[in-house]
Length: 612
Image (cartoon, rainbow, N blue to C red; front, side, top):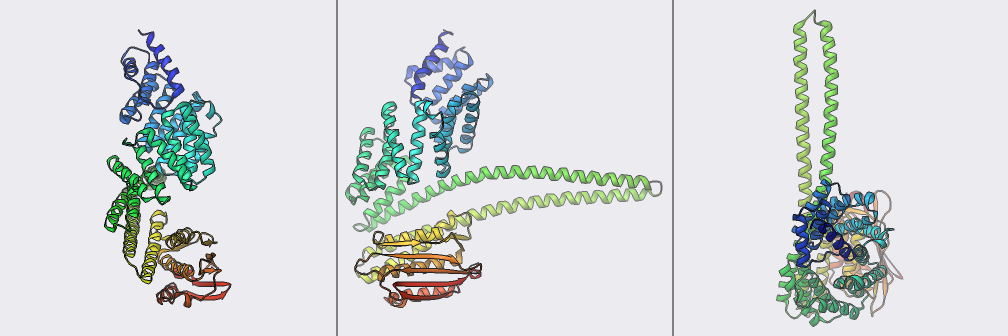
């Protein structure tokens, strides 16, 4: 029997390595592997058994998978079996990626790559794949794309096992689609789909979903719907799992974009029901938000209920993302503490050295004058000891104060980000309430005023969103803020096809007290140009810029190539727009000038120190 066990492992490995995806084993194979672990087989055979059981339970029972892989890794290290170590590290970093255990996940992936370079270079591709997957789950698409490219273009990628090749193709296709590199994403997703049909038919749905999202972005809605329905039909429409839930949500979004609200409603409700059971908060946020839009005109009360559900889920998703960011900060903080401890050791060594020098000097001096005054020596030693204790006490006090200030600063930053986040959420609720109220008003002038108020609220909401997403909580990068603000205003007036906004400026940061009035000024002037500069469906361009004239002065400029009406004429529908621009200009200490040529040019000069 002892001779048969290693042969069984070798035979099993040769079969499974061709299809190395984490698929469940049948009961007889599973029992046979457990018998190997509990038998008197050699350690290498047991390590292989631990590895295959771990891979087989990765998706069905992740905690059990981690347990088997950890035991196999410990045995491989004890037996000095590096190939077994690599196998068990592969199983571990995959399971850690699924459970979002980032610290030990990254550590396992790095260990796998390091061992692979020495003992099995072909297996390094798997570790690189896992680095990309971990960064993708952490929400760092920039790092995920870097590792995905490194994996796909690795010189040994095409000769590794089929599952590793499939993973490299699929990961890169996902990241290209997220980066809106749609041609490259479609090529990679098609390659992944063809590879799935050849080796992993049960995994065809994953690249099809990427292709559906690409088709939707290209507005090929029928093709996108076809991909989604193929996935749902193959996975059984009523099956409750994360992937089917994601596909139902995607299909609902596509139908809504195709202006088919009835079909969108069916799949959005299915997606929402499944997401609640699975606690898939991202799908809850998206599907509830979509249902809120669907019911907005016919049933405002129901629309508002869905909106509240979407906002609650959004808070949960934001908290999850915030926890990921805190995890990154924790990793960096551990490194910073290690650096501080090392610096403290150096400081203590230097203090000891200086103290020893002082003591030696004192001892020599004391020896020289000992014959004259023994009492003087005792007094000098006493004074020296008091000074040493005082220095040590001051060092302890300074170190404690530094730690308290560092912790308080980190706490204040988190609290300030939370305040900006909640302010942004409250402003979004106010904007949504204005939109719901506007839908019940028939007077065009009142509707126009409501829309203007909604845009002003949203301009401030975007600013607070930028603040809590920024590393610098006191300053706003204005170019990116203007882009988001202009897209929002064009979308609210349904002018994205007719009017083009050109933002030609370098990146400039303003403090919060200046960014708010500047944003509201841009909102008012851009709204006026949309309403009055291009009558009768005329197409046109609005140019927006914020420039440094010199180190002390800034210029905000908005111009259009419309019919050339002055600001007074444009804003005097109610007079409020003109008064608001004038008030905000004086608030930032600015001076407004305008000229009418082939269109209108409005410039506002203000001093930087007013913005400090």
